[in-house]
Length: 215
Image (tube, rainbow, N blue to C red; front, side, top):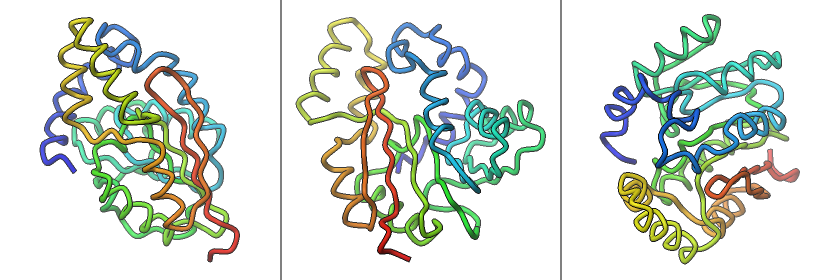
């Protein structure tokens, strides 16, 4: 996991909503159909939900509006402040994908635009942890930048460089964006069945359901 991402998001908290609204040209395609992406995650959420990487609380607001019993986890202090302003009633803790308060009877684990902060090895550790945390028929619902293959990832990096989007190109190379086959292997090896759905040129919806045979 990147050691400096908390500081990065403390700084980004003041302009994050402008970025997701498409006002940052370099990231416009990454956040294309942002509202729809959030709605997709909400649609597949049920019961008691943990949200990792709450950010400024955009997904949280939709989950709470649906009547979801929500627990938010966010490492950035400034992001937590922004999220609480939008969602005064949100139960919110400091933590991250691999470190959070012990919680019981969790039915869905959700996140948007954040799982790429973990290395592939850490992603596997997270899935192992979530398998123990989730209820018998629980599921993981993540929307994040992923790639079908390493070749398609490199193609998007090259395209960003050709367009002069150097921040985006650096981001795609320095963060731990992974591929669908790797995530499939991780999910299946830790007791989940997994499906993927493309939501824009960068973002996929990943739904990993705890196998019926597991407890």
